[in-house]
Structures are given as structure tokens and as C-alpha cells.
Length: 176
Ligand SMILES: [Zn+2]
Image: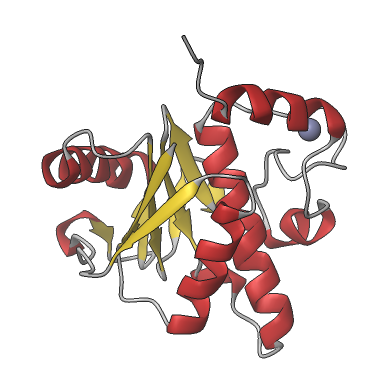
């Protein structure tokens, strides 16, 4: 089980360490691709200074599959950029089929500890939901859907017991 992390914008060491730590804590191997791929400014909505989530995701899917070609079970893009979706002021991630993008620009605060905690929570959330671990009842689980920074601060930093089981099943390779 390997997860590849792609920097959409060049991330600070502190942030990258938190990302690696967060993904490893889920019991999977993580590899950070050091060369950032850069954000596609032609997809930027210049009035909002935000990327449109779904078009960025399509671009990311194409770029990631071209570069990585089946080397990983999950691919995560992380960028210090901001994105939106129809009817929403902003979104924090887009996930689908083992692929995700986490938008961390909104997570910024001068309190470093809180900032890194938000980064860790968001990447675990993106990773797990991308693997189909969806928790939609109460918010006492890291895999609950998060749309705002307030929601991210509210969810607990760990999977609930039910999701822990799903996680175990998704990361345990079947032996024959
Ligand atoms: Zn859960």
C-alpha cells in the first residue's frame, strides 16, 4: 500500500513532514514527490482568485496518471491554493477514486501548532475519503465530510471505531 504525494505548489518542510506523518499514521507507506508540478493558471478564476474544484481535479487526474503511471495505490495532491465549487464560497478538498487534492491556503493561522494540526486532519480526511472511507453520521470521526475550516477544527483527529475497521480492510492486502 503506497501513497504518492504531489506538491501542486512547493510546500514548506514543516508542512511536508506533517503530511508524511499523517499518512504514515494510517499504516501506509508514503512517498513525497519532491518536484512540485505547479498550478495551472489557465484554470484560475481571476475574479475570485480561486480554482474551480472540478476542473482542477480533471487536470490533476490527467497530470498524475501521466507522471506516475500506476506506481501508487493512492495519489494526493496538496497545494497552498484556494478552490471553490458551485454555490460554495470555498472547498477544502476534492476526492474521488484514490485521488485527492487538498487545498491548504485557508488553513493558515499564525498559531503553527493549530495550522499543522489542520493540515494533518485535512490530508487524512482526503486520503481516507478518496479510498472510499466515508463517515457521514456524526462529526466524531476524521472521515466526516469537511467543507469549512470550522468543520475541520470540530472533527476529531482520529477515525471512529467503525471507520478503523474499514481502514484495516482497505489497507490489508489479501494474502493467498
Ligand atoms: Zn468514522
